Length: 199
Image (cartoon, rainbow, N blue to C red; front, side, top):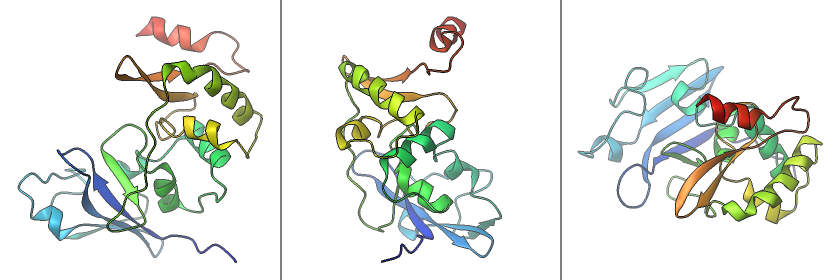
């Protein structure tokens, strides 16, 4: 059976207290994209615009020739796309599918679903002690392995939507979440150490 590309996604916010709530819907339209806030979101006293300049909080439908910046920022960049290609059997075919593939498992408060009422289940971020397994997975991703074991793929679920070309992953250490920036086999110097020294 052939895969029918998905052309729309529902946007949720995890910023407020309680379960994530629907914010709106983004959809492919012609040669571009449209976005509209959900009526239920507009009616909330604590509602906010996800992009006050480009997507102010109104009932209007907004159009763009490109994916809206605030949503594009939530999709993976170079490294994250490599991870998702290695951990998903069905590769994203368009920008909406990249949103759904990332699911909001990185930084930020936006989550995405193909369903109007249900969000995909996310695992907890890996532990600091899992970094050795993550490094094994990193080697496989860099070598172009597109069939990672499920246990390794799960470890990369958090952090893949963060921007940048460098490998990184979110880990939990002593009850807090940290961004672990990783070295690459083709580095000519210790880039994570140099970046740490530059902070």
